[in-house]
Length: 227
Image (cartoon, rainbow, N blue to C red; front, side):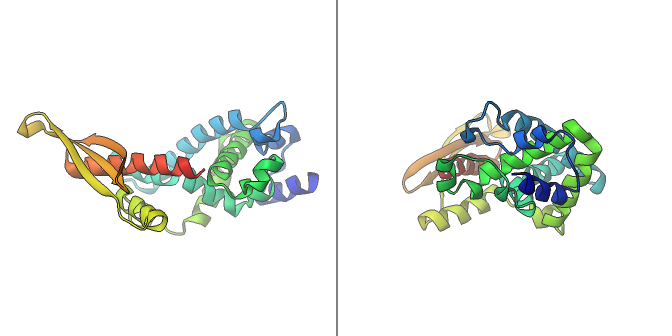
């Protein structure tokens, strides 16, 4: 265990003074210890949200809030954190149960993303925000050589289509359910239908917006089903 933690600390370029903190950050709830990494994960999520938000704020001084929010959402999520976890080879260092091990837990996107957030939470508690910023931005720029809207932001409809074609061999159908309000303030409710089954539905001020929101919800639902 000590050797594994030493390797990870070298990758982080930081030696924890409180070794119990990094052990807790690497401990999944399935490992059945009196502690696990869920609280540190909660903290790390908030810290990463702030760090990435500040990074984008300075990197794109002329980009509006709405676009910055989209860009941050494309980086601060399970898929994005798994990319950073993979750079650290976190799957080699986490503590999981034998059952989770047999279920390929070391490769699970959700588990690795959570472990990354936990490590950042632990780093924040012991070394402060500047250290987390240094480590996380280095990882971010390693994972994404180009960071801009074109390189990173993928609209939800495109991502959902790629997922459904890979898993179900078909593209999703967008079904208009209802319209609301007068002509100058119309809202649309649209459902995503896959294999004849309604997966999600959402409203928007345009059909395009409603489709994107419904696709986003469908992605969240389908990703949870595969965890």
